[in-house]
Length: 544
Image (cartoon, rainbow, N blue to C red; front, side, top):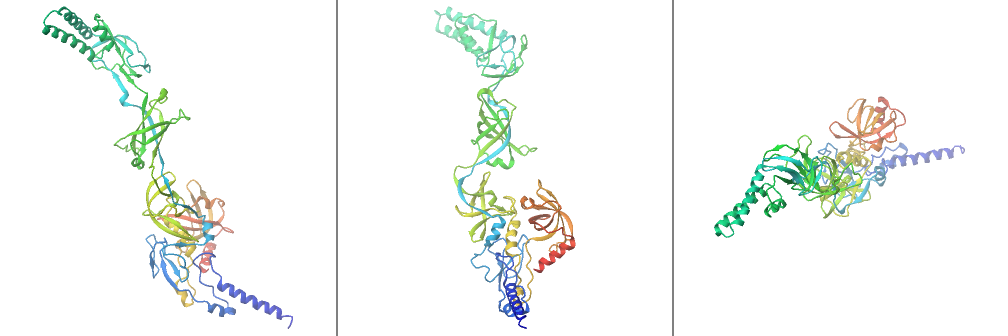
């Protein structure tokens, strides 16, 4: 017998140690919520009996709101309230979430303090260069006549203000000149006459000059006539502005009528850019805002301008509103008809409390940020948003300067990530295995319903562009689904980076909105799972 005593003693010690370990081991190391204690073997029944059943305190809101219930219930998003047991809420204030440091690292949670900064945003729009309508002139004589000779005879030709455009013959011009010459000679002849006669003759001469001025005859020619010159058969018609000839209808020898356009001249030293701003951005555009205009023809140049007018109409076809910019055009580089890329500077110079866009979780009806309280504690806090820039958003209410907010987790897609998916990821990890009140009677407590669902199957295909995967999975007991092949949305494209199509996988997923199922966890399995194997794995998971 003495040869067998050591073996028997060793076996007894091993059984006692194993029973103690099984009876005290927590499920889901590091998580706040734990599974009910496993039944102890008969050899250590005394140790198991010594453990006291946990007391159920209440059920709390899965989104961290200060709302509790004495009985199980669901929130407005269909998520189960989470059971809280005695000892679990120590150090956690009402409305907070608590997860382990290990889980924080696994989720890839990152924080950044809210900070005061100036919000500067660029609204980008497509535009086109147009002529400043106020610098466009038509040359249309106010009298009838004939074009005797052209001085400017080509479209596109630059002209200076006062430069002769053409020589014109008009009986009306000749008559007006002669009337002045006669009146001027009469004034000289009546210098010894009464003042009334002299005054009348001077008025007649002045009226002739006024008529010539009203017909846009240059002051130089009028002064020459008034200086004692004779009436001329033709007079020069000069350009009223400096610019470029856009249109020329005048032809040597042609007859024209009063008001007929012979030239169209535009001053291109300053131009307009008409930018088509999208409907959702037009409320941010203000008159006087600075702009930067880029032209493909000059990639190394930026043209600065200013918003001078926001048009009162919207183009229904493109859902855009025209915005007029004014720019200087040195060297006439900007040519009417060119396409332009416009950046409008939007934002206030006052500093406001801001957080990164990725920190805001938008449920569709409200906006929430998670405040890092330290030691794995997070407070979901509803906020009121203000102006936005390309990377940050103003917090008008809910967060103070310097408070640390969560800005990234591996399953958050972007600033529009659904609150259910985000909090479901936290809540599932922390509370997915809380025992039901029946545990107090010493019976095996069933597992509380998690906010997500699990399945096993095969990864059939990955659509990286759409951010979706096709999975053939086994039955899903929590949804009463049979085995099937379907598409899922990836909460984070990185979930499928290291897994190839055809691999056996296990997934956790939630319903973000009706009909849209989002995978929050995806990992490779040992081998492809058949529907039967998937059902077996599901049963085994529920058993533990």
